[in-house]
Image 1 (cartoon, rainbow, N blue to C red):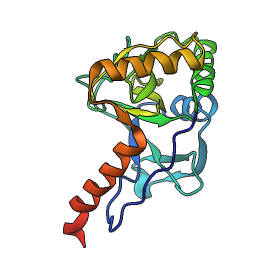
Image 2 (cartoon, rainbow, N blue to C red; image 1 turned 30 degrees about the vertical axis):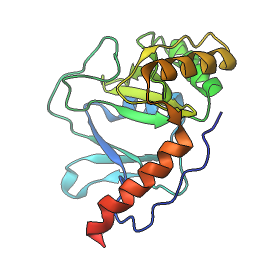
Image 3 (tube, rainbow, N blue to C red; image 1 turned 180 degrees about the vertical axis):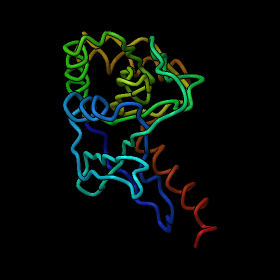
Length: 204
């Protein structure tokens, strides 16, 4: 259930590259993102002067490190409890990872259960299906599958992943139409591409 084509943006000069997390304990964080979530380590090493150790992670051969983990976290506490659409109030609201389809989302949920992590919340956002949980240091993680529709956000209902794909699609379309302003994601992306091109004109 992968989404359709994404339009190119003429004249785009800026895009989001990667996200970095400081860690209290690097080893269990690397273990979670690699063994449990399946990310690949591209590099690792020490920062000059012994300031920190870095682990670079990716799932895309075109991106060296969408995520980098750094040792030496000093601030904050490890949060616990359900992630109700994000970690409200925390310095890091959430890290979001895109998955290909609902079958993969179900498998990730099973992997979390196997790790004795029952601390997850599945939500239907209309434009996407998400599973929220926490990594070993309490950072909110969103695992997301795009839906075929766009609907104004924020929007969210409980997502029952025990249902089959056809029923989830049916319920999602019903949710989007009830919310109003629903349109196919391809139409919305074309409009968005034009807006981005206009916004980036100042960088040309």
